[in-house]
Image (tube, rainbow, N blue to C red; front, side):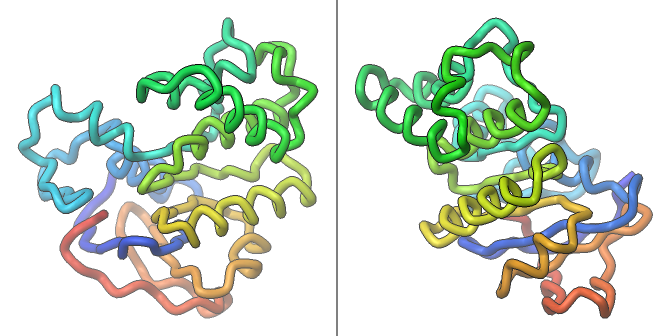
Length: 219
């Protein structure tokens, strides 16, 4: 259970969310990508107070957020291409406006030759890469990633981090929940959020980035 959280994510910032298993990282991410609402307190995203926002307003906000799920959440009957294309099609794009960026994204994550494959025929690492491509294809304003490198090798983890930092340079605010200290060490300038037993605490001295100051809004 999360308790007494009070912090702000600066626009265009890059953050790592760390902490032991069961600390509340996934619960916090769900609040950030609007899968859950807080039982008390406030959440402010994109300069909007969301605590009292009507349910019908949520889809528009969610389209501004990309999510990399730990369990992939791919649509099993759709091909890798169609899974990645889904956010673009939901936003109203079609034709070359979908074909070109999706092909490029699949090539970047090393799956150009697997575009027609459906998730059940893909390995865990391949499914993770499809999930990452889908999350970033529309260049979201906020990207929330739950252990995005947990099912890929070190080389692909480096490529994923390169993509995330490139998106960050384009202005996307990024928060990555991870236990992978090599990712943190490879991201100079990123800030740390650390949860322990549902509360926000300062990062440990072994992490070389300074802690983020606590403020009263998230987003």
